[in-house]
Length: 372
Image 1 (cartoon, rainbow, N blue to C red):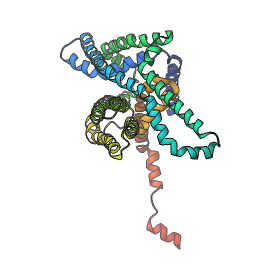
Image 2 (cartoon, rainbow, N blue to C red):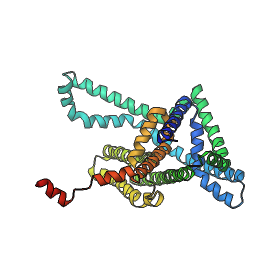
Image 3 (cartoon, helix red, strand yellow):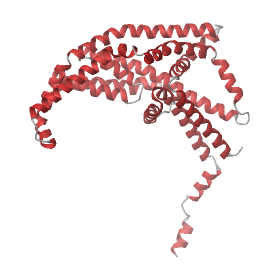
Image 4 (tube, helix red, strand yellow):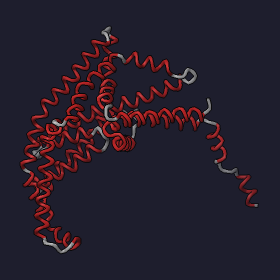
């Protein structure tokens, strides 16, 4: 098979994959979530299987403990989050007043730029809209889930995720070895060593990033939530959890948490010192993440650049929604490994070596002859 034939085959395979995701993106969410959970927990099942525990019971045990842990975390956090959301909804008018007081000096400039209308009417409109936005946002977060769940389609989707996700995860964990053996038998024998080497690299990058990033995000959520609560920041627990969860996306969690926390701290106290303390919590969190958490949990061998991950998540979300964002990291890992292998192959090829020879500087003798 020629290089062109290989290219057409793999390009067609990738196009078929994208078409499949696009056609069935409405029903893929529980299956993708189940596959992600199975991939995350498979090493634990494999370890129990080495101790002569059947994969059936190992999968049931690990999956049961995982969901018990998730339910325990939800049961512990939901009352705290709900309380802070209610406080946010109650204080929305007061926050709107503070925003208006802060924006008052700039209203004259706005009047000059956008017209000579009644300044008082502008202020009143902005005040009313700000209060409505804050109250609506907090009310949606506090009780929107229950309202959305009343819809028939949303309810069916929610139930399907709850039911099919653990079922998918269980069967994939139970049959993981069978599936990998089946895939292994499909690999082309001529390129078996190369393909398995690439699959090993992809697995190392993907598993290192996913498992490491989830652990880092969980640790940062605990650190930020506790630190902001101890510092006395209003809604600090909620902001800390939000920053930690968003840390699953590189650079997004810390940046969003820092901006939100600093704005809340300033409107809460109006003092630069307190605002600086809140900002310092995120700076210390970033120092801990960069120097302790990430090197220990992700290591230097992961090789997925944060900008590449961020682009992949945005592109996947824009194309396929939540399913696309879940598939973005695996696809980014595959593309990164294949591009790296292509560059290695190019540098080892005669074409690259011939190019290097042609780029060498001319000898002194040739230079002197050209001058003559």
